[in-house]
Structure formats: structure tokens, C-alpha cells
Amino acid sequence: MAEYEQFWFPKVIDFRGRVYDLPLFLKPQGDDLSKGLLEFANGKPLGEEGGYWLAVHGANVYGEDKLPLDDRVQWVIQNEETILRAAEDPFEERFWMDADKPLQFLAFCFEWAGAREHGDDFVSHLPVAMDGSCNGLQHLSAILRDPVGGAAVNLLPADRPSDIYTEVMRVVVKELEHRVTLGEPTAALWIPVMKRSVVKRPVMTLPYGATRQGFADQIVEDTIRTLEQAGQSPFGPGGPLAAHYLSHIVWAATGQVVVAARVAMDWLQEVAKVASSANLPLEWTTPTGFKVRQDSGSRWPLLRRCRSHPDPPSQ
Image (cartoon, rainbow, N blue to C red; front, side, top):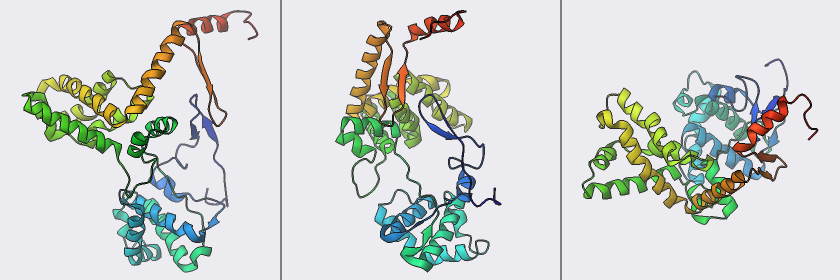
């Protein structure tokens, strides 16, 4: 594609309204190399605030994304000489190779060199990424105007970013420690291996309908099997039972951190049961105009019969 001054990406929208790029490799939703190669065809002058957010992006892709925003900008300033050397000769100055996303960071180095040379008038073409924090819970917290859940998923101003997975993990550890005092041996086995990754997928999938049993299955897949493959599982053949035990604690801990979202989900599930029992679909239109219709399970046989009928009704 290098021979073209600009090109476009064909998109596809799935049944949920999510937008994806069709190309398999070179795309804005690709890996570090793919993203590092791409820039906007139409640039924009940095202006007064553009340099700030360009610096935040550079710190993010290097791996300093947990710092307060001002500290990320300061990190770039402190490492500016090395960044500029990398932009001038990336084969000699290999500082960029230590980044979490090395090729995106190298692209930033080139862009930062241009910004330092031309100042606020520099026309930047580099995409500045803004990542969400557990998007499902962000949506629920915003809909509900929930300040507790909103703070946990970075919808409210804060000096440094919140991490809902770490917050849930801390609640889980506290409960495990309590259960150890009650003499529960499984709790004592879980504490040494407890970390953020154990709870991440269960918390992430909760807004999409994950159940307590689903939590247990994910803990088996993500944690128990990983520990067993490394020969580090303290549970022996009782891994699935240990996952079942922990799933109850993670389920309760998530409800403590995002109370309103959990209540809203319970309400929506009850509404769905009522609609399903009456063979009624759930319908709504999103703010972007995307129309959603979820038919109840009992309606699908009727729909299949209509489609297979030799003379289907016009509706």
C-alpha cells in the first residue's frame, strides 16, 4: 500500500452493531506492527493542546499508562533526548524496543521529533489512541449515573486511572483472608496465587450476561489450567472445585464494587423473562440509530417455519 498517498478501509458491522475492518492484517484494529505502520492521510495542526495529548499517547504505548496524565507528559519530557535520538537513528538508539508497544512507540518518536521542530504548527498524522476501561460497565454506569461504578471505570475525573480489576481483586483477597480465620482451607490455597488476571475476564464479561457458573468456567480456563501447566497448582485434582469456590467470592466482590450495574442487570434479566414467557421480542433503538430486536427463544421455531414455507407471508 506504500505506493498510494491515501487509501480507505472497508468495514463490516456485526449483529450487535460493532464495526470491524475487513482486511486481515493492515488495519487500525490490528497488532502493534499494523498500528505502527498506519497514520491518518489528513493531518491536523497540534495547536495549544495537541502536544499534551501526543505526549500522553507516547507514554501510554511505552507502558507508563498507569501514571497520572501530567506525570505521563513529564515522563516524555524527561526522556526527550533519548526519544529524539531514536527518531534520528532507531538502529543505533534502541530505547524504543523496550516499550510495551515498540513499533507504535517508534512511530511516536518520529512524530515527537517533528513536533519539537515545528511547535504548535506541526501537522500531526499520528492516531492518538484512547482506550476504554471495562466498556460494558462504563456503559451501565453512565446510563445509571452511578458515581461509584463510574469512578471504578474512569468516567469521573481522578489524579490517576482507576483499575476495576484490581479493586475487585482486593475485595476478593480481603474475603479470602476472612475465610482463612474461619478455617476454610481452600481460601488459604487461593491467597498465594491470587492476582489481577484471575478476576479480569469474569469482571469484564459480567455486563454481557456472564453468570456465576460462567465465572467458575473462566477461572478454570484462565487460572487453574495455567497453574497446572506450570506445575504450580496448589489444588491438585480439586482445581474445578476450587474455581467453583472462588467464583462465589468473585461474584459477590464484583457486586460490591459496581452495585448499581448489577441491580440494573438483574432488572433487565427479569424483564427479558417476562417478555419471553409472553413470546414478545425486546426492541429498542440506540442513540446512533441502530435498531435492535432480540426475539425470545420460543419465537425462533415460528420464524424458521415461516422461512421454509413455500409462500411466506409478506411481513
